Length: 273
Image (cartoon, rainbow, N blue to C red; front, side, top):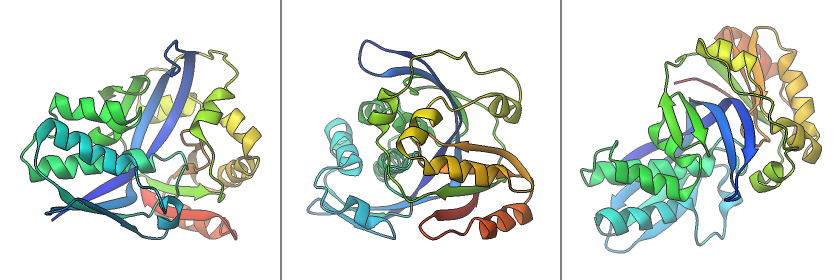
């Protein structure tokens, strides 16, 4: 059996540049990953199966088709390898802007590739990832990178491993499609050049305004995070509703986690990888 982490994705910056004729959006984003995430267990089996457990399993209950099963099907179509028993431990909130489903699909592809001696940088593996969703290639790569196009054109860059991170979700799920639909269409310019943290701080998340319109509690979370001592950067990730803060120290992160303990809010301490 292969045990494969499906680490949460953060958008340290997310600039929406244009609507595309194919219905997608042209973006520039700064992807980073944290140690916290879901976990996939994959093993060869006589009959294909998919089970789910963990604290957020209920959010996917009853789904006969999902990104994990689609990833397994498309891997088998391209590489063979038979059928597998797949078990997902769901530790991340569903529809929360931190790439849970995309990370799960990417972890499935990595686990199957490991089981069947497929190179993790095989272009065909990334083609499958791209067919599954805009964030899946970045999650398959699993390292700090600039994403362009729909997010699938990746340029790996040096990250800030070990940086303390606090994730906070106010307990609301938002639709990525709805948030992109509400984007005002204004191109506010490209990301800057320079060191990672400088680029992130100079950047923005163009989906924050429409997300806050849909879920005003996001504004409360961001204000609370930004007010904590030792915060280096506080921002919403993806299309929301999860927000994050990078901290100067683990002690500052721990103090913030205590301060932000709120009924109904999901709060998790982790670090960049």
